[in-house]
Length: 490
Image 1 (cartoon, rainbow, N blue to C red):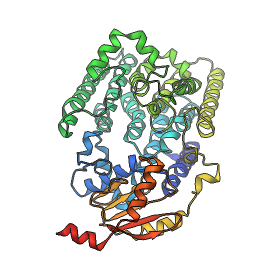
Image 2 (cartoon, rainbow, N blue to C red):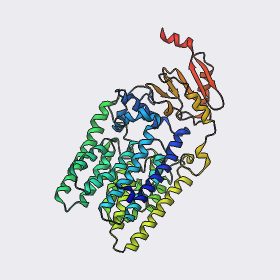
Image 3 (cartoon, one colour):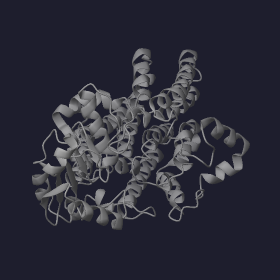
Image 4 (cartoon, rainbow, N blue to C red):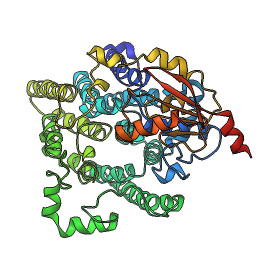
């Protein structure tokens, strides 16, 4: 693409690249990324580039192949980049693919012979969508990469490039096991779009079957085989049953009850009230009603709605994290495909402007205030608190740089991603055979409560098994005592 002819597109990409970096990269620098998930995934990069499987010991007491937790092959593919970018690798990759996704949307609408303004508006919508900003504010996740590639799947399909489309389909499939189910519904929804084209209608239906087969294969056979307990761990939908088969039966037998659960606090968690309502309102304001004119795009979102809103954890229902990113490409393409078919161009232009304004207001909402409690300092790039911490970041980095690269470390969650590019590292309070323990009284004590954290750290500091190597108001570093190391060697 000749960016000289698309200077506004280039400017848009640059501006949002800066905005996303101000969120994601600054968060990482200021210790607002965590053991789960950036730390665990960065440790996986180290293992993969050294031709070994990751054992999940960052967050598990007993070693287990990380692919049993999420069947994510992207980490293997991206691992060579870690030789250059180290702990920032996945954050840089994530930003790059989000920007690439916006370019894919622009290219797709360019094929429809729309005005350049509509293509740019669709791109702006994608970049502005609250789910994108939420995703970049919280670590790295491969479903963000998959969602960013969906526009390119649409683009290649529109060009009738069967080999390229098939390769893109495969590349999206290997992102994470649940993405295959979403991609199956996208393929089936596109059957409606291409219903008059026999070849591509059949191709998309075959793609649907391939995606369903992949989903069943990975979740029912491959991941259980890789797990210690020979089970699939990520079915967290007790409202629907104990497995995918029971969930389908429940949805068929209890459609009214299932529909109600999409809107109410079905787990009765004390903090779960109105979390779903807030999400639904933001989605509606972001333009969902326009998709009534092209209901196949709503159909494509069914598995995303179900996976999000039937989940046992109320945090998944809301507007935080990476749990809304899949709505961005489908709504961007669907909404502006509807607008593109408006015969009155003035109404089309006005609708585009209003949709962008409403979408921006939703993103401002999640930055400013939300029913679901979130750490707003992760995303409020317009406040000084985003660029600082309540301790000296510079001093912490100075001390962390002294930890040997081959040392075994147990680190508190926010410090772990910065030290994860090594063979063995554990999320404190997992210690095991660690040679160094690192924590701060000024950080969140997750996964322990404050009293347990204080009791454990006090006991460690007073133990003859550990020597206080460094301690101030910012950070504490314990080193395994020479006496204790000798005992271990015997």
